[in-house]
Length: 439
Image 1 (spheres, helix red, strand yellow):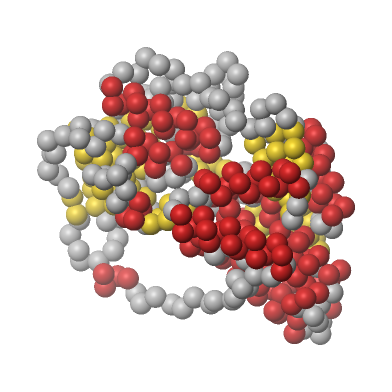
Image 2 (cartoon, rainbow, N blue to C red; image 1 turned 60 degrees about the vertical axis):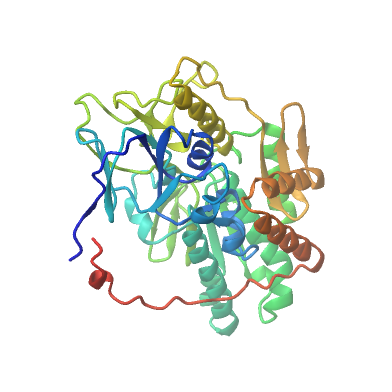
């Protein structure tokens, strides 16, 4: 067995370990003083990905490489030179020894920044994780894509109409931006792709059901945007939207709803909730506890309450203010703004300035030429909102190659209604990794 890899040498410079290379973690390390600090970025993947476009990977609209960028390539840029990247999933945070432990190594730290983000929340029904599909990472989005393609291919072959109905009934749980975007992408597939590429099927064979527990979609957005999104899904994309309806249970391909009705569906896509990534925290004060949603309670300088020298950013941080007494929204802009301020504070060793979130607006795309956007002084919908959504997401991607690739894909799909990405790759088995000495 491989011996535990422990980096025990104390660097001359103060070491900052950052867990998570998402919007918060990456923006933080870009701005930290590399001459003053020894900076280590830890992430379970070796790439930064762009979560707002996971749904396009899942619906065969984009290749995963178009929305991902290798950390080691990013580290070559001037703003990140001097930062070291370590791949690994942090399992334990030891406050007594001031170390983080991954499956590969043990890393000592002087300051720790937790920006690990969130994972799926099944609201007390953990068995759902065995049966539903999720879209919280690139691998999950790919798994979802392959299942959709498999079901289309399988449905083309069967003569059993009941089986075909089950194969082509897709249930999306959650009416937030991701749920709306996934349901909209499936609606476009039903409306445009089935008749062109799957000619033995009929568009009416495909059934898409979106479940939302509230009486409206897109909870954080304006009533105007909520109503427009509902209209687009129902009228333009032929999605069966059911408000005030929860998924109560899902066993044996039967989805049981809160109103007592059932749906026979072979594929349920879960986008309904999120919870903070979990860590085994050792040596914390007896009164230390996490905030709702498995998040770290932080003050207005992003310092974790109860853990000395530990900070939390983005979705995993629970920060309240007068405008947000129940916590800041879990949005990319919050994470980016928090990271910028914290980097400045750490560099100056001055935490007197309080964080104030500047809301730059929110948006969601529903389908081709269909989107909604709540900007600072205006509400947009339709084609103009769709163009705005595309522009904002395009400039937010890392790497010029990725920007160009996504732009070309979008333009090609817009004018031809076609994509070359509906390819079904079945992964093969890895050799047993025990021979590599992994824990």
